[in-house]
Image (cartoon, rainbow, N blue to C red; front, side, top):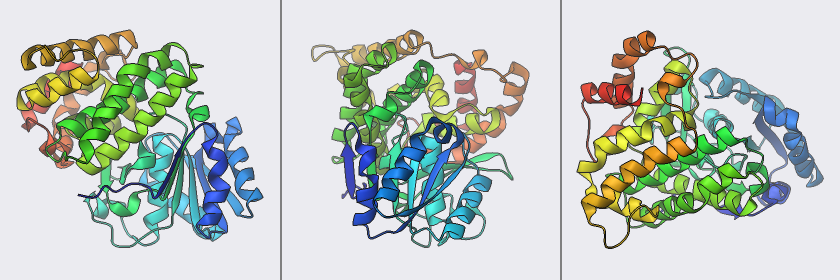
Length: 384
């Protein structure tokens, strides 16, 4: 089956400088640059606005995207787009910014409560083209037709998957991801690895998505720790930037599974960043899921260099479980109990809602072992 991907992708140092030419090639003249306060203050947004301006575009900047973007922020961005009469959206930032920008771009053709478009292929109208410029090597949102937006009325993270959400252009610039601090490098790096693993073991994996998923996993094995140890290692940063794109392309076409299904409610209730919540959950969920796809997980272990051709399937699977635990330990990924604002009493009280919301997302249905609500609650406890 054909893959849904950006029409144009550049993965290279300095790719951000192509934004003006790409917007002009699309025949656009008025750009809304969507970002967050940090990127705006860093000067990166102003630099890219200058690139767009030099190509003849009128530019307005909306920097109101917060971590774990909300439907309210999306509608604020949409108002800025209408005010500027923008005909193209340029997204500069991490996964939250890219998800918000992609949603802003389709909001005009899809009015009313955003929650009515939750799920798979629910959008009714097309949107504006999006030029996605990621500043982190993690979510892969620049390559996906997926967004996660928080519904402020229910405190629930909504997942929308629709072909109309895929960016038109992806500009993956290793010079931008090289600015990530060490903890963020770890969290979004394990998030990238999670995308590759879940796309590979998903019930919807295909012959087209498998090579992307395994390439993502292999690059994480080669480059994640090196990028974490030395942020100036541009070879490692470039490897992780490409891995993020490949992982995004793979899971957007094959679906994510239980880690993501559990991650979204955890983020919504306790405001844990998406990459960190995936990283915290990955070892426990993999141990639960292993019996449902032992050969696939053995393939993941071999791609990571944790097992070899002579190792049998069971040995490779056990090596993977040990390897994921060790990876989190080496990268100093905390456990849930170590996160600020996550106390045990509140956590236990939230378990039924989080389990129900995880199941409602649909992602667990693609998992090698489809869990019951009680099993999801127990997995949250194991990650504690």
